[in-house]
Length: 236
Image 1 (cartoon, helix red, strand yellow):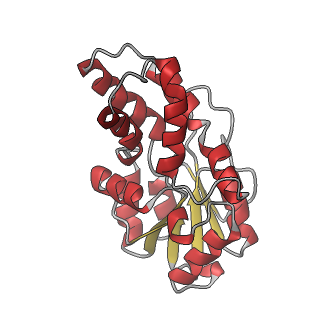
Image 2 (spheres, one colour):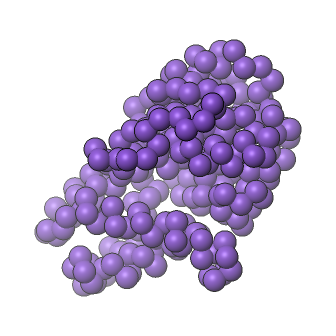
Image 3 (cartoon, one colour):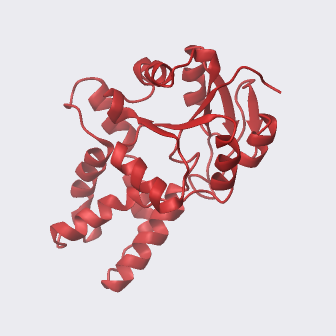
């Protein structure tokens, strides 16, 4: 068992919540009530591709500080004509964009977090926005002690300011905080700043044909198939 850990920080999109299925199911149901014949699976897969380029533009100073909500809304407005969404009113487009606030957790997330919360301080460490993560927690019953994210630090991962800022805000030293993620690159950056690392497998985050993060790429401190296994490995 690993000793000396006081807090756990969690990547959220893909690690804690199943963003892809949540959005497809949410917008498919909503679209039916409005007679929208849209391939929401294709839509969300394209929409998601705007995430990293948008953050990179902010990180490089090409865009002013922009929230994740803002990044996705820029992309939505650009995509709307090709998906027949450009005829919708502003309230409907706002509802679509806010689907990122309504994501549901993987089945093991809430029970696993509840176990871990009894022993550790648990926090998000996401590129998402404060209100987005708070609404998601309320919607899905996620029992966070703290919400830390890109908006708090005005930086996106993998900037060091977000990892080191979280460690400082939690009142810990880097080796006392474990970053938990389903993404090897996130853990690689966390480890470079002295944090402990926990890899949780989410082999269907990007759907049935996912090709990345199907296994641990390095000797992370913990490798688990779900949050229950993570909790057991950490003695929670």
